[in-house]
Image 1 (cartoon, helix red, strand yellow):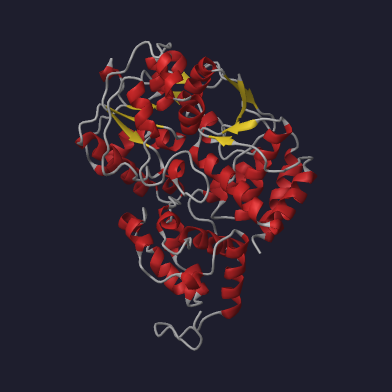
Image 2: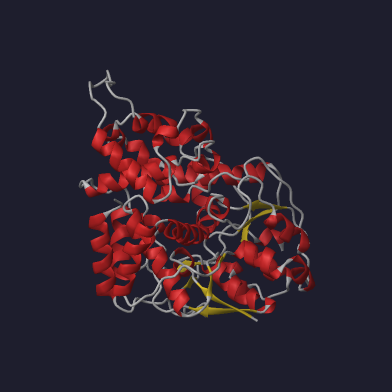
Length: 178
Length: 285
């Protein structure tokens, strides 16, 4: 992180504390400091969300490594990442834009951001049943409907203690990665 | 006889029934006994953007359940396989993470050591069973030109052990050849199916799926093979919607690799769940 720089678009200054927190969170999952990014843009050239949704991981990295964390938190594009892992695979510095974006999105959620798209539904399902969705009936090509039982598949397994499961996950949700 | 804990995750046992059926149908022929696990849940993968601790807890939880049964895990879903493998890797390398998660798991009466193998369909077939044994089971070779779609999480990222190489995977092609098929590389092979975008950008997700199928069609393949339920959801179940989204006529039969193997092993098509594939696979007869 560089000292003394100012973003001339909005006169914001780097946020030292948030930058340190970011370094710490990355270190816990074994990823180095954003400092090591030298902006080669290999991540963006392979990014699966770049063409359609204009996500540019190297720009996210540029803002993050200079400490403009709030700016990254406000970027809608970070929610467009498909998690294809091409960026971490191809980064010559072994940095992980995908994980950096996960951490910053986690912070957005902790700070009360409303979850986009179907995330709320997914989360609710997992908390209440353990699974992201319930078994659905599917149609074959002749429009005949099938479920697990009709297909001869065993019933889907349920949680032994759903209340405890939900309690633990909710506690972890409040903590986050720190 | 190799006994494995079958960990299906969410997508396979709730909608991609053809994958599960074909797995259950062919694996016993290779002396693999699949054990259904009680008390399992989602692997946590869809929660990464929301909270990485929840994601890792869920993965560690399913690993611990398998450990309590003294079994290695077979996770046929690539997203689950990555989440479980990554969590095991991260917990091994961070005392702090392991401490927090192990403590929480104890509250559920679960014990985590992270000392087991995690298999995927691809490495189970290629590395554990092997091409020779597969070849011996072929009764009705398939004679089609097949495009292999690996799926992002099957091959990336290399720090975590993956079922095949990140940039030049070829295990699926080798299996296709052994069961009688033909195949070749194509430049869009590593492109994403679009599945994760269904949560936030449905149209972009379907566009990505459509573009992938369009590329396969343009190269005159007879069909495509997949090893991940998200590929099944996007390239097969939603092929018609993907075609509408990009305004193209698309008609590429899509099969799970395990379904193609079942066909080559002369198994009953219904038991492989072939009638549930919505892409037009009748053209192949």
